Length: 239
Image: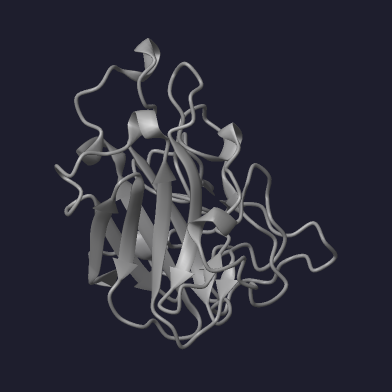
C-alpha cells in the first residue's frame, strides 16, 4: 500500500509531524519547503520566524491558530525556517540545516493556548535515522519514528508561550531528524475539536542535517517526488 504522510494519516504523531512535518486539524497534507541546498538562517530571534498560516499549523475546530510560528534553532541562536507548505515539495523534500551543530525546534503558541507546565517535560520525542523522505536507496520507505531504536536524547522546556524541544547531542550529516510533540499531553482537558477545541494529537518538524541521505531517484525537472510513497515499508524488508 502506498503510504500517505498527512494529518489524516493513521500515524497519530508526526511531521511537521510533516513528513513533512506535522499533523493538525483539517486533513491537509503538510510538506516541507523545497530546498536545493543548505538553508540560510532567518535571523537571531524568534521574531525573525514567519507567522504560520492556518493551512500549515495546528488549529482549533473554530479556526483559531494554536501554534503561531515555529523555527529550527542551533546552539548559536541562528533560526532556520521549518518550511511548512501545503503542497508536495521538489527534491530533497525537507529543509537541510548545516552539519556540525546541535539543534532545537521552537514553537510559539497563541496566548489563548499557551501550554501549562504540566506534562511539558514528557511531551516531546526526537528520532534520528538516515531515512530519505522520498524512499530509501534500497527501495523501501521508512521514517525515523518507525523504529524505537532511533529515539535520541532530547529535552522539552517551556518559557511563557515558547516551547522548545532540544536535541541534546549533535547529529551527523545525512540524517533525518524527526521532532515530535504530543499536543494532548500539554493541552489535555479542553473542549473537543468539534466543539472548538484543538484538533489533532500531534505536531512536529522533520529536517535533514548536512544533506539528504541516499534515496530513490526523483524528478529533478522541478516537479519533485510526491509525499505519497509507493514502496514497501522497510519494516517488512527491502525488496
